[in-house]
Figure (cartoon, one colour):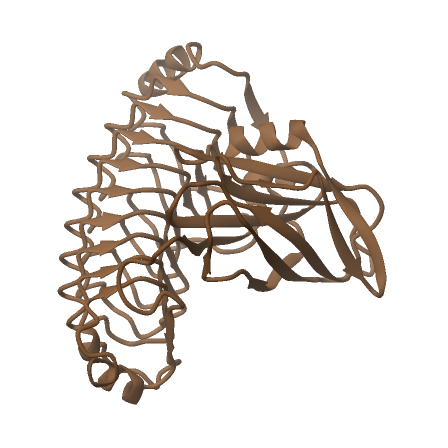
Length: 407
């Protein structure tokens, strides 16, 4: 009770009202998923490029068709799109109309990194099951690598932090730095093994790398010449990260998903810079994050949803998270074996929102001891074993709302 009293006293200094939430409605996500995002790899300064996005919707016979959708884009400051965006669904057309209050809501929930902003629009009639969205984006005189995020959400209760996302879409403006600006996808061990033969001297990758072997790929030794990736690295269905030991920098995001035989992140031991998000999901043999020991900051968000993970050990040198930290997710992606937040001990600031969503076996919040500020909302929900707020003693500022789910 003493610890709880301390936290209550500190909560009085937070900017916004505390909400004790009795149901999970505020965590509901839209029944959508991104089918594809067609965005060019490169474009010129002071020009426009076309984007087409396909989104799959899921019909719920109890509630009927999906209605009143929300769509958003995170853009570099100086870039623009139109105030209305056209979509087609079931051979009918409609408009998504920019809404300032929704952009502000998204900015509060998920503060964009420096030099980016949120464009968020509302669809006032009906989103049907499947949607095609077409629009143009206008660049300015800036050159370099830029990353666009997209969200889609079916309105019930507006909780844009939990919108369905498609993140870290790279576009290079001006001359690319490095090889293969269009990126490369590997689906077999042979393609990995032949990489240095097919692309001699390619040590700095300009674009994205996607590794999607689904158990056809056993190691990444053929990539051991890579030192940097300008885009994102996405790994699915692999069994080992051996071969990435020389990789120091990733300009975009790092996504490691559905690698059920992966027992360690060893191979990433020399990674020191991650410009965008770290997403660790569905790696059901992974018990911690050892292998990321040299990573000191994450430019955007950290998402962790893994069945067997017991702690976040391996992130011990991490001091800041530029965007959101999501440990567990309301739509069923959780960390049921998680017993400790150890590994976050040196993190002092979280630029976006913090969500700790069960089920898990956390009994306290130790590991967050040095966090002093959270830029967005702080949500604690579904943590049935949680008996204490110990670990929040140094937290003095929450930029958004504090929401606590009470059983």
